[in-house]
Length: 186
Image 1 (cartoon, rainbow, N blue to C red):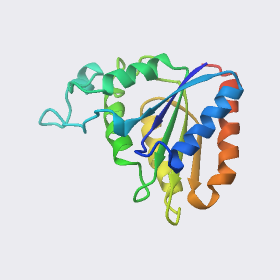
Image 2 (image 1 turned 90 degrees about the vertical axis):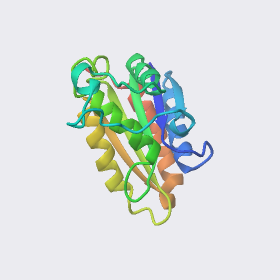
Image 3 (image 1 turned 180 degrees about the vertical axis):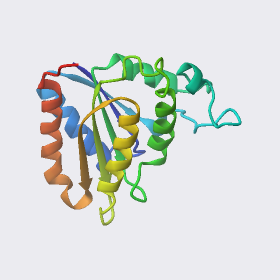
């Protein structure tokens, strides 16, 4: 099983990266491989809302007109067997890099051609809040909406807060093992 871990954190050694790495370790224990991508290192522009109605080729053809790293990342998603999204929580919502990516991904997925090899794919969301940690559940709701709009099979949403990170690392590793080992009926 090939999994892609899409991380919206700038810090490859931060709390969100630790959480994503725990999922990756679980996947590896179950014999799956995983590629981790840090969105802030890629060039992913925000949506331009191309025409007067706020849409463009995304709605008409299931692709985006912007020439950046989005199309390559979408192709990696299509090639993967499962997806893990991990984001730090800012203002009870997704990081800006994951928001920019997610906004454009869900737009291309409004068209059937955009959903090819994405629809029905199992996905896990991980939202890691620093500070007081209270925004993690609200962020999970926001991420789940995006994932569902894209047609993904949302198999788990895991809120994490700075205060319970060490305990949740064990849960995240188990979630990775389960994701890799659980048989699914498309």
